[in-house]
Length: 221
Image 1: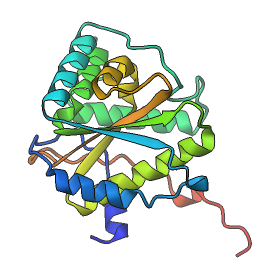
Image 2: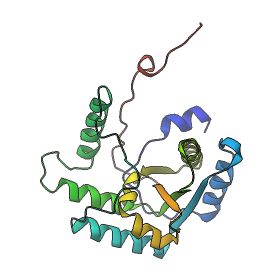
Image 3: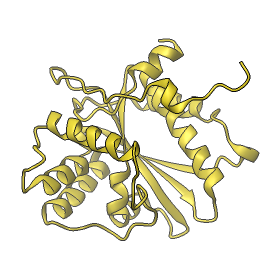
């Protein structure tokens, strides 16, 4: 699989088969991803790979919180700005409608929030979840570095025939996650990434992207 194919085929998969992912494959991916850009070579990320019994227990606890209507832990950073102006507001609304309709959850379903939270808390059936933390002393530049690192991880997963789903949702249950991985109070949970083989027979969902002209300007030629 070449780089263009990996980029084009990467999408947030929300239905995993549960088939185990060999540890040596994960080690190969994470060794390769260490070459991602890092300003000053700080490599500010700390990744925890959770599988097996610990992941099953984490899913159980997080799902119980979701089904109980637990609003989650106090957020340490906002997922989105408080007010989204066009075109961002329209993009996020269209993507949300498409995403949850594909999961069989209608927008007018009164139990929609709980169902969405429970599906997320179960990592969509993934057998592996990666949790990415950053030291609290790090700033926007290092957060950007972490994003490039995680994108590199997800592209290398595609090269191995695996799929992923980045989930900021896990920050809602950061205290539960922190107890599982043993993260200290000096670290901030950036996100979790569910990893596994895609479940067969589930129609793939690809959200649209803006035309290049909407997001790119060529200057000087």
